[in-house]
Image 1: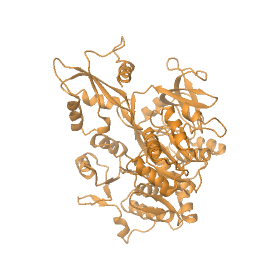
Image 2: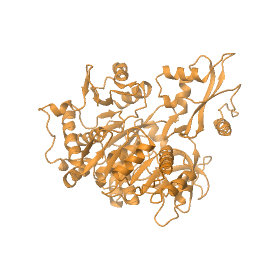
Image 3: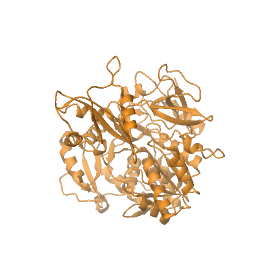
Image 4: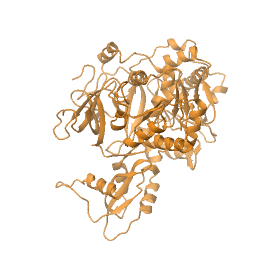
Length: 561
């Protein structure tokens, strides 16, 4: 067993103030701090430093407005004062279901000031997902927009509120608060009784091992799993990639990835405080607008899923522009074709484009191409392993395989999560040596480069968004015309993958794709999870034990693409 982590059996004695048991035992901090992989600092310490040293510099820009580092700190302190006024205590949870707006940075820092756990929720999630997440996390305060396009978030929460006894308040951001129990964001600015919670905030005691981030990710069970991270696990990731990529205060980050994903959260919300660099938010993706923002703000770095890179490169190629300020573009979250990276490097000669690999549980396992190595490795592999121990094991025997042989990817290191909200999920996720079972397949080559070759997990990755096939199947099984259903990934030109449904009908019933989508609409499932193609089949391909052979179905989708 790895010192500091409990692998099986009862959870460890908690050294954080949240209500969840974790794998972290007290001696792990000493080991990682001795190695330099944990510095024992929190976001608060670093944000306070930036507010003092770079107070008048622009910290964040979004579609409507901007804030300096000093303004971010001031606004966060006032929100923290409101958190205390309404009775929040360390270890409790605040959630936000917001686009890439600068208020997310303020909410995150205010939570840190108070020792509160922050829970970002993907904006596309609807009643089914949001209800589960708020209940499982026992969220106290929820921040939402009033509406986005045709989505009315206030109405959604009204429908859910009777089943959420822990929810104390709902805060509407950039909208009106017309309902009872709904607060308008910023009301605390006008409340003279709320003052800054500390005059010398940088010296307030902070526990770097406390749980600070709760992020839900789709699992093969169909039930979202709550991933728990501490200040130290997140900061270790930022330190490692910042050093690898040479991030400095002069860098400008373009963030199109949702801040409610691990990628957007780390690089959009947290990184600016570590390095004093400016972040430019996009709350909806448009390649032409992205090209304009890169020019306007002299963007140097961006990270996002495959469609972002592909469409940005296409827009710049049509314009005949190269955007010389852009020096790094990390691409991951969905399958990345080598030609997408090569094309980016041709169109953007000043920019190193490369593939990366990580997850909510282990944020950045690989980070691109080592200095001095061939840049082609950024296209043909998923990058150099950084800040992590990786082993590849046989899916059949569990034994470690040699380099070049495909197997399941297992990861261990200082940025791996502390566990899930459900202890049984945590126990199942780690082996006896403390390695996290990613469920992804791949192999190691060139000494320390990792290449992803497939997935053991039954997930569909649509534009960087994880979709649980079982979650969709569980709903469709209730349709009266469905005898059997299997949902698998099919290729999608823009999104990489998208759901496809194979259905065996009951008796002589009929069923159309539109009827399936209407049925899922009634369940309030996110539309991105709806199958975009339907195969009606007489029977499913199965093993002798009756398990559906999904690889056969996926092969049919690829053949028809």
